[in-house]
Length: 200
Image 1: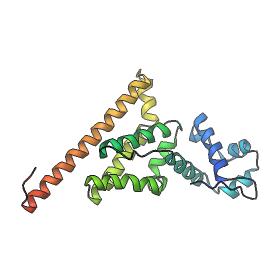
Image 2: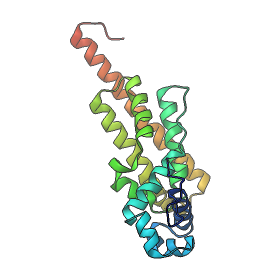
Image 3: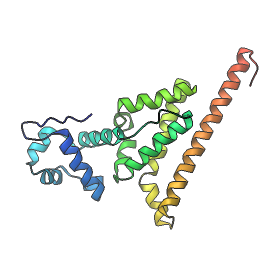
Image 4: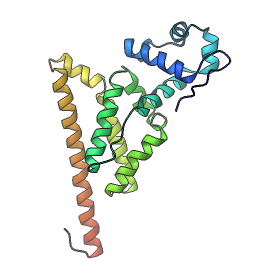
């Protein structure tokens, strides 16, 4: 959660991130500079740097704030819960051009603990091993962030409607999850064979 309390300079994490997100939504990450942010906030550049020392740290705060909006479904199969979560990620990230690339490049820092734990728990409850959890986490977030927004925009530029692009995105996610389910079943069969139990 972002710090809501203003500093001596009158700034809070919430204010800074809200304005930075607005600038990114309008013109993308590359257009976000600490100087433009300071001007928009109505403070000196030094005041902004005292509160957020680097753009990298600022983008991490934004990444966490974006992921904080993701709602992880509490009911349904593990595939439906993961799909719902990832569609939520895609919707939020696609509205902030350039953030997907940053989140992919800094995946270990970008995903907040609570979201990471929720996704990991779904995978563990489904029966994935520790290695399988790591593979699935990487596959899910790289697929989603890889499509948002550059993949979406490329398909739209090639004549696809946005509704069709969304449908293709979700279909690809279905294929990824179906493949994961097949691997999970195959692993279970092999383990039952090794233990001498009949395969189901």
